[in-house]
Length: 341
Length: 258
Ligand SMILES: Cc1cc2nc3c(=O)[nH]c(=O)nc-3n(C[C@H](O)[C@H](O)[C@H](O)COP(=O)(O)OP(=O)(O)OC[C@H]3O[C@@H](n4cnc5c(N)ncnc54)[C@H](O)[C@@H]3O)c2cc1C
Ligand SMILES: Cc1cc2nc3c(=O)[nH]c(=O)nc-3n(C[C@H](O)[C@H](O)[C@H](O)COP(=O)(O)OP(=O)(O)OC[C@H]3O[C@@H](n4cnc5c(N)ncnc54)[C@H](O)[C@@H]3O)c2cc1C
Image (cartoon, rainbow over all chains, first blue to last red; front, side, top):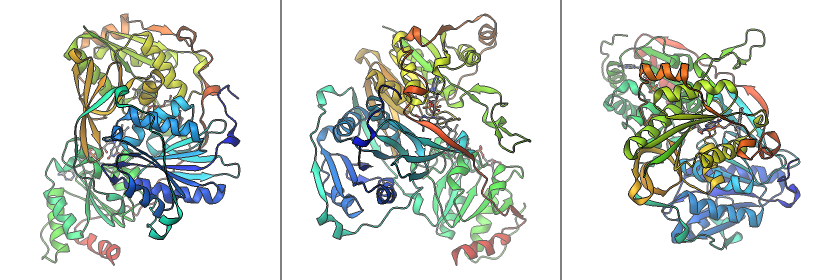
């Protein structure tokens, strides 16, 4: 046991970070709250939500409605907009004072940005990008996460240090519906704000939040890849004919064709629609990892050797600029058109 | 004033070459050739971009076994001025806590103004090392950086950060740790003369844990996390049917929508 190992018995409660930006809560926060409720059923701990920001009354009430026993709020203008240093410092102070056993944070860019600023000074274990969670009789979190691009599922343990922290991949767990009746039974605790603007080492000069679409709940998805070469029209039409959400590979997002909120994969969202149509996507392992919980997978690609066909139930080898419109036509009840394939 | 820009580069098994061991049926990572983590090329490009903006020195650093020298040679070929191999048996079993401590101490020893890292690695892909370096040193950080803008007159570096559904422009005081969004910096090709220099004449500086004064703060013992079971993930079973015409898709689609 190392010097920094702690008396694990002193630590209790399961904490869930509620990530909000300007009053808008990231859906992963509610997914975590629902999943953490299962953990506290086993451990008997309280389920505590934690929110950092400015003007958090509504957010705090919603956290209670969604299952928290208690909400800790650090409410101050210094936290809006988000910055790693004030968030990390505040979160760390709360952890060190209140000693939670488990701390779950959404694996968004924000969550993954500041989690280390809590875990490092607290000498806490921090497991990245978890997709399966469990807790044993001794309260040890069994955090499972994909590694090696998704080839391996590793169980990461943190036995001698506390808290046991983890960032959780968005879209993997299902959010629980809010129950307004719960609000009256819960506590909202306002905590001391320990950070001061004068100590900040970073400054947000501009911030633009655009498309914050939540593709994780979509029943049908049409996803585009580099193969669409910047022309989203065929895929958009197909999506309309299927009443589907548009999503994308990382390549299509990096090219700037589709907003990052719609990215599927290891560094994007995990989706589980009934139907997933991959259009001009090669099927890299980092992409497949985010879509392999889908029901039926259809691939449209002009390369018969593209790996995506191994991850699809139905494939059609052909030019997406012909296949997509033809399929849309048929779905809209148009007569058959010639398609080369 | 010019800047010292340290870049973290990690050696990883070549993701495209990881095969299945015919005897055990398990993934065989040991026989895959070791290469530079792909996202670290983008980090190097960002570091060279910053050097182009302010002048100074780019120094590649890797923590790994002695043969990780090859990724440093590659970094030097791409344009790094110098490189450091941080190698010690004591590092075995390190999770991201001691790994980021080691790189944090190395960055201090190099008197780095900026540390540039990749978004995450292709092996354990935690993305936790860059914020960890910043946290150990109490430095600022700019993760998911898509563009960098050195502002020496302000003593700051600004970056355009990719945030969910948008972007932000953030300026941070030096010293700062930057983690570069994968795919946003097109790595420049290494000129032939640099490749030859890197492979034949270049020798990295070598540091062990003691040189950084952290011999009691690394390895398995100080790592809060440990890797328990590792299971190979079976691919999801799919029908794999290829249809010749779009009409072949209508029925399966109709079934899903029913
Ligand atoms: C650390 C890390 C994390 C990553 N995370 C993710 C992630 O979260 N999500 C993700 O998607 N990727 C991720 N990637 C990137 C991933 O490795 C691939 O590079 C990416 O998925 C490729 O995108 P693509 O399939 O759109 O493009 P490509 O691989 O370029 O494929 C384009 C496909 O389109 C086909 N095509 C071209 N023209 C046509 C046409 N006219 N008609 C039909 N088909 C056509 C081609 O045959 C090809 O198969 C990650 C990589 C790393 C290293
Ligand atoms: C299957 C598996 C799962 C793991 N899960 C966890 C976990 O959840 N939590 C945890 O704390 N540890 C974990 N570890 C341990 C972790 O892999 C090591 O600490 C590793 O050395 C650093 O993490 P990374 O590769 O994820 O780096 P990342 O944080 O993904 O790397 C980001 C960037 O930091 C720089 N960098 C990272 N490592 C080095 C290096 N050695 N030298 C130079 N630059 C570097 C590079 O620029 C890189 O692009 C795991 C290990 C395995 C085998």
